[in-house]
Image (tube, rainbow, N blue to C red):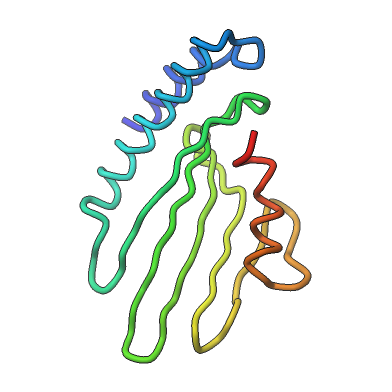
Length: 134
């Protein structure tokens, strides 16, 4: 099902860089709708055995891509683990991952081939900004 949605949306997004405002709005809506469908299918109501999940969808017109940012939080007695996973929704390609816990601090921070040097959330935010701000 995800592949069918991906192919149909990719074809319709092929001229996105030159899209008129109304077309761009439709592409943004389609990205959000497809992200909501994927989230509902994969994460249901957003909770599972101590985990809570949320997401953000962003259509980047410059790159002609629909980005899906999955945000998860796991609560233990004395530890909270929070992670962020950025992917291209239709190509199912990972762009970056960030994870930290109250016990360990940051234990994963990368965007494409770049490993965060300072292992901070703000550095990760800066690295993913070109994908989520366009």
